[in-house]
Length: 411
Image (cartoon, rainbow, N blue to C red; front, top):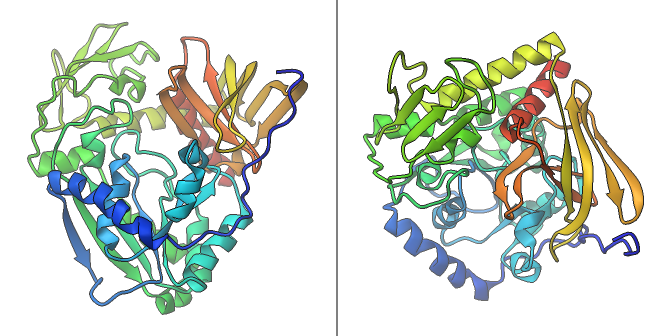
């Protein structure tokens, strides 16, 4: 790799094209059988008579989200903001169906121009998944504060699509399909005129309120029974800290059981999404509450100034849609000063720094590309997938710490 030339970068300047008419029936054919099988019910509020252009903000839980979105906007066409890894090996196709490439958690002025071109020149729907990653535990993720500014700038209606059941069907930590039913709430949040009158903070408050969801609570309230025998297998990737003995990184999961290998306490994930301790007290009714407990614990470390992570990593680069390029080994540090990645980039020593206020969140993956759990960090020209090689870590904790560091310094 030392002698290799720097690869071509993805062309982010290329204007988005309108979804090709010949491909629209293909997208419908790929989507409708999936959502029909899942008994999709779409609850529309204020949508009567609304036609493009508009900005559609969607929650993000699983790959099935895209099928639900296609069904919700039928028969209209749209452009979709998609992360660069979605373009691997199929750039032409994704551009042809309206895809616009984005490197996650970067401030890209070119993307804003592309979005404006879609809604104000082409007069189409712009679909955005602002959480920028699949939900880790069935709850809404932090949203960028720039959404309010975008809504005011575009001067078109803003619609939200809040989905239910997609996470439960295939959570990011165990993608095996559960085959439960799904729903979606499609709501006109405000018109372009209303957006012009509201402040940026007021717009963001309304969007955040519309995006609230807790899938396990929704499952329990709607009595949705999931009988998949390995329904909890993999959930320890998110629930990494034992609430009984407070030990980190010793959790495991199998079948419908979550277990701490340090204190040996066990919990059952019931068919209706509740937690039940095998012995002793049940600390949390739902896994989502366990996740928020972990957030609070990370916040305490940050407020005390003690948060710290460092490990050797295997690093992959994703400069374009051709695929990943192995850069080799490096080191990743995450502390009160943000991220520091040091490695070799095509024969030269390389350092990437990401200060806390430059990232309101970060993207993580579990068991990705058969290499392991990873954190990915992006610049405007490349994306680095970093796989820690130790055992005492959790990429979920790193993601939580990224969000809490941002909030800490923002205050």
